[in-house]
Length: 184
Image (cartoon, rainbow, N blue to C red; front, side, top):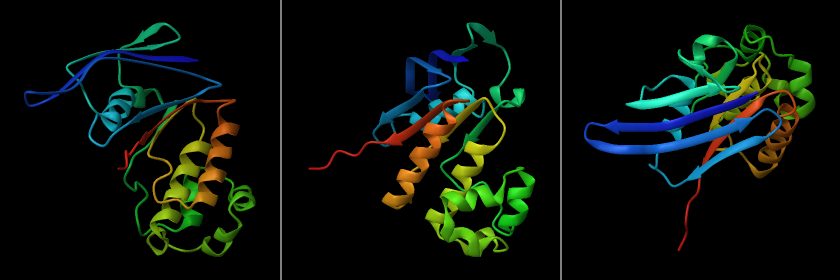
């Protein structure tokens, strides 16, 4: 599948945030959006998914225009920057809800085996991010948008998530964004 987002123009009040943006992503490849804080990366993902309506844009899937928000099609998933799993849910319930195999998850993240019946709010920020990223990557979908998938993760977990992304790109179109910070 080829996803194209073309001629994106976004304003907040009178301030132009995005202008003339073109983005292309394909199944079998991982496409990354890089940039500084506040440059519109998250806005671009939200526009692509259909959560944010810009002044102008055109979305094409396999060269055919899509005239409705992508999230309404059912074949795209989106990992937002913020937590989306309700804090009172147990991990067992969340994995059942999303039809994700807990034993396979534990093969990748053994330390989580003690948390199966824990509530989501009992986890650290990094542990929550791992759960949510894994769930979005492993749910049935053809397109996955990841907004800052590595935030709050330890270097070891970053490597594991990168490996999962490499595995999933064989079957899915993957697009993610990360913030680049220039240091003095």
